[in-house]
Image (cartoon, rainbow, N blue to C red; front, side, top):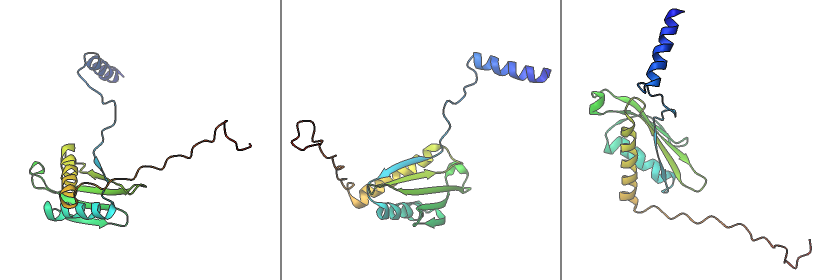
Length: 149
């Protein structure tokens, strides 16, 4: 009982003096990119980026379900490969959300891959295609309408 009191007291004191900072939001170990290039172009560019440009080993891929698993190597990981993933989520408007996760590495590694993919798509396919504007809602006839209710 006494030990619990001491631990709680130390933690309370640390919080009071700002020694311990508790996160207010959960950590998110992933980076994302919304691609307007369509699923096929984005999938192919992502696969080539991982396999050819970066020379990483692809451990599993499934274009039908839109994911790619790979072994990520970095000088920071001591050349020991760590698991990474790239997920391709189709949007209703033809866009694709690409989510990159490398859980065992700092978040900037994921962001570097996302930035690399974005640059690759622009270099290989040019500017992203323009998305057509959403159709406007039909106008309300209003009270001044000649149409009977």
